[in-house]
Image 1 (spheres, rainbow, N blue to C red):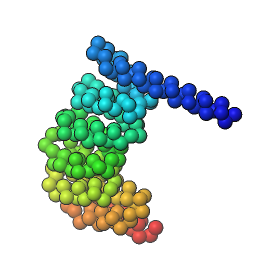
Image 2 (image 1 turned 45 degrees about the vertical axis):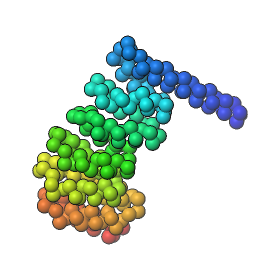
Image 3 (image 1 turned 90 degrees about the horizontal axis):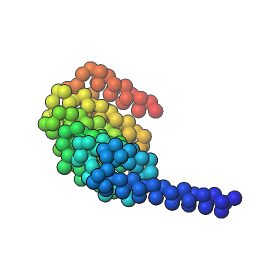
Image 4 (image 1 turned 30 degrees about the vertical axis):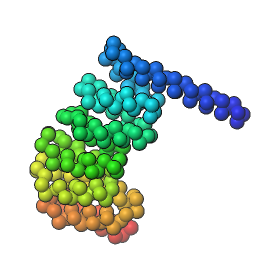
Length: 212
């Protein structure tokens, strides 16, 4: 039984590699239709591996395929994806940039903090908010420090996303067992020039940590 299962697993793995190779070939074809390429990217979201990253990553800067390229890359458990997304931050603009920033948040890439931090003060519409939310998902002390430092400089329209990011950082740090840094974030939020709702939520979070 064991050998039969092993053989079946090996065969399935081989088929996945073959399927991925065919999908990569579609993306490489200059005469492939937009639909065929979009379908290939969608399927790579299921079977993609490190092998497809060099072919998919350049599409992050393609207005037609950037969204689907991110769909293909996000599930791949390989650090080459994080490298590609970090590299794309300096190359893409507009909606594509907002999407790439979001993907770094989805990936919870701690190495992205240094690259994302300057984007908190970006002039492009939506970029600051996307960055604040992404840093919240990264959820490290460094991510929270970037948000705290940027908060006084943010436009009023972008501050809500920064508050959200800080709350997410604190929640992530609690899960990681870093209650001290999480408490510091909540205490800092209580001292900011923020709406009463933010102050109240932060106060409740501090009280909950003290009681737990």
